[in-house]
Length: 463
Ligand code: URP
Ligand code: ZN
Ligand code: ZN
Image 1 (cartoon, protein in one colour):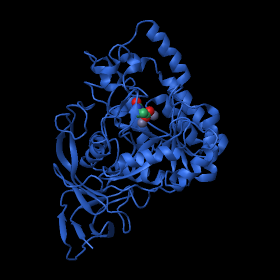
Image 2: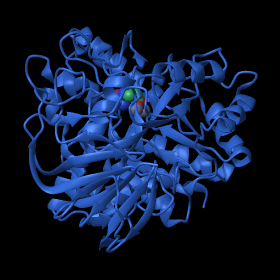
Image 3: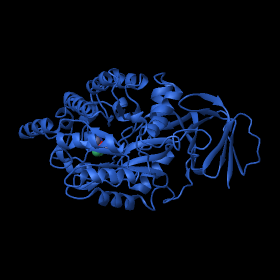
Image 4: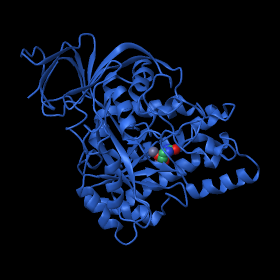
């Protein structure tokens, strides 16, 4: 079995930071302790560097159909870009088409990933229709390792489901141990506001944000948590964007409810002003929920620090500006919703969180790797540096300067939401199940080496 020894580094986990060597045997970590002295086939000197668990991004949309087009990264380009940024596991979303069985969607998404993914991947299932066999289908998905489901309270006529469906799905998780993830925005109210805006000739990208007020998000978060409370099950709010929504999660958690939420770098670092960029460039920042006034940002950082928010994901859903975002040139409702970010999550959260004194190094690891692994049924296989865990490891250089730019990124999209952002701290080497897949600017992994992850039900949200 191939052995690799990482020497002289500082091992950083969610719990502690310690000087230790890491011995890898085959695909797993064999030992973590100071002064390991074995003749390994490969020795990596990590002096002055951090040794952290590979990043886990539990919210990505690769090769996803949306609004008459498809997200620009497929599982090959998307997982490759993720790896460059220090992410070694993703959980993407399969979408059940209305009137069809979930199994069909799972097979479709397995096909999209097979032969392309270069890092390990799990799948959530987006429920659009519980129909006749929906609840049985949920149980069947859990048996296949799809231990979480996303339901939409927004996008009437395409993805939105009613409260009956949401409550039934939530209730079923008390039997099958899955976790329901909610896209929380009041889609019915938003649709009325959108129709009014269009009737008044308000078609520019900024109206995407102005027609989706924070209260439409917080109302839906409140309702989602209330339904989960009645069903006596946990719930996870995806891509939380506003102080208003955060208050709902905090209030629920203060009452001891198992309510969890993630936010994303864009909500922490960008504001609604981006949507006012001239020459239709505001469209680059059209995603849902929308960007908020910048006053929300410190509240979200504070939420991450105090554990009112538990996870940072990306909601990576890239559409090229030139030939995809442009579909909404004359009508903001036709702009494909989504932005790219899979490659930059660790750089941005390390720099703006740890370097700026907002988060400890251990909290950074917890938010970007360990807690996502726990909540989504992958721990301790993923998200940990300990004997027995998968050897998914990032050798992180905390001093490395890096400028984010579409000219150099690996995502297959023609712009960056963080163009020109300079950070200190970047992945120097990325190891996935014992194999070095990124070294500096070289990609050494192979499309297709990534494996489907069967995730366990009754993960951390249930404990
Ligand atoms: O605008 C977004 N967020 N696009 C991706 C789909 C979703 O709602 O997560
Ligand atoms: Zn969503
Ligand atoms: Zn999403």
